[in-house]
Length: 184
Image (cartoon, rainbow, N blue to C red; front, side, top):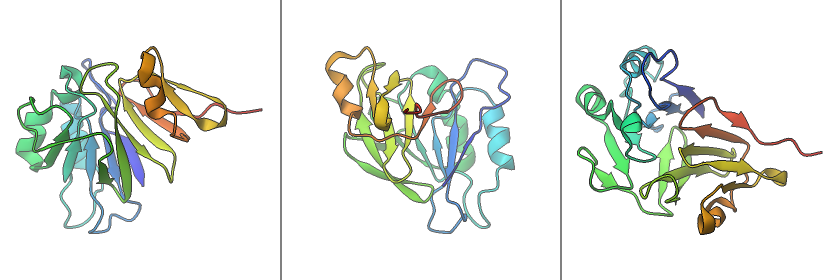
């Protein structure tokens, strides 16, 4: 799978907006945008992305939560690309399918687990791919532990929600991605 941040070069406060594609841009792959951000640079970046011949540039959008900086471009992306939109919250205008904890979604060329982590917001989810150790954390604060396990910080009982995840790379809602802590 390939993951690129479409919000690079942003000029306004925004979240990251990750485009997840399959390694080969196969017809069966699902070009997926994780969060839309709120900067129009995301639209420009999507128009320039190599997403496969005959494939829609964005087939689906998965929202990690519904704060304005993560969903600001949703309506424009819906108008331009007509993707299916997934979110945990049923209250956001434009959501086609409501997520539940434990759902599985096909992003790019891989299956991800939806993990409801109502810490940063009541509708926050993380997306985890066990085969590659990729975690999209949104704005859920996470910390790394020896052995690659991840848990949510400052969330009380929610800490255990991510404890089964052996994470190699975290793609957060803000800032750059980071690799798991090195063990000695």
